[in-house]
Length: 425
Image (tube, rainbow, N blue to C red; front, side, top):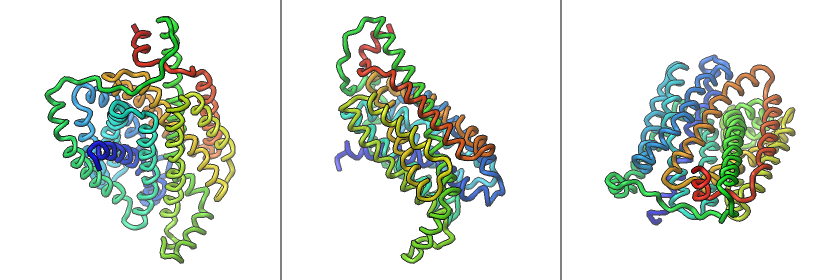
């Protein structure tokens, strides 16, 4: 494997780990802690909220440090720091301690998106497919959080779900440091360069005034859809293990009994089966990003975004009241839409933001995204405690409708970095 491919692979593993670490607690809370500590699921979510706030708020300083200091250096900090924080969280004895551990995990997790995506969009030219492939790895992290944690709950206890990935992340961080050592040394003594920006479509001629109006319109749509899509992403990825724990018990029991005959998990190990079903849904849905990435490079963001939003609207509307096989099929449908839309805003930012400031722009985008993620946790807890998941699905259908309306206002062509800079003058 060439150094360039190894570089992209390690960046992808970073995205995998980033989402895995932030969602380990979702499965731990749903399948283990609420029983072991005798604390309600909604109450446990309170302790995860500060970590998601850190995930959002620290994205902007992480992007600023990457632009000013070193992007590769910040990636080394990410791998090793989040690994140590996860190991420490695995030794928590109280809800307050685990909440503090999740906060520190969130601080380090905030590094990846503004820094890793800036590297991906500046170093390689096939932006749509690179972002999509990178996004698939992130979604597999989401999926494996449920799968690995469910397995470890049944076979080693919930603490191992934090300890094992923590050690692995530190090992990957050391490998990343070795691979990029020469570049890190050279970067330390060299002023930051703009880097090679990905090619963008040639915009239609515009005046400064019309260009400014176009830039403001696209920026408003990007940040509005980012915020609303974050509510959908958090509500689906964080709550899905609990949704499956409630609604797929019949299917999980049947699968557990069937698998036991082939040397699989024993019939009582429902956590493993539920985690496996969540993994299957997340993993299959992540393939949507590869399709979306290819279509973005060929068609542009507007038509692709419209289809993804429409999918979510339809499947969220169908979900209330469903259980077992039908619930599993519809959940796959709305996850295809939710995961498929993830690379679209990153693609648009990559086309419009200039090289030297790209990490900071991504930082602002993820401050919005992950702050909303944090705010979504109390929403999930309140809605679940008051009305159950059916009401949550109806609210998510409304959110998908908002995205659909906003995307309809996107122009067919995006402003280029040069046009955006001219409009901002």
